[in-house]
Length: 127
Ligand SMILES: [Fe+2]
Ligand SMILES: [Fe+2]
Image (cartoon, rainbow, N blue to C red):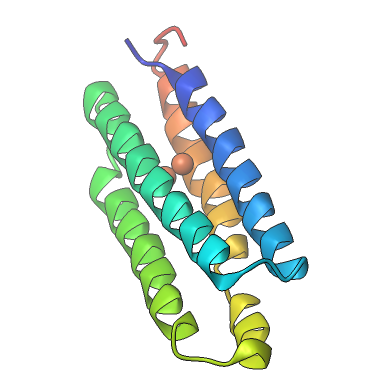
């Protein structure tokens, strides 16, 4: 019922997608391709957050509102940056891209998401 392994798999996929996005920018792939990857990343992230929020409800995780708020902030950051990227030239594009909140996403996985997994493990529910 509490499928933490699914969350782990989704985290792995998310990290892979972010690396792919990073590479696409580094290799100067077309903007069209880069936007498509960005859209994919955002769509997958939404799906992942929904999965995680469902798991928090099912397991009675106490900090759910705080955690949902963090998810909302991460999506907003991504959308805001995507909006900015559409209006800048090539040089600024790379510069702005470096502001992509990769670090925030990774930190979220390592700290905030880890707490959900700890909660589930500690409450004695089998993975
Ligand atoms: Fe997560
Ligand atoms: Fe999360």
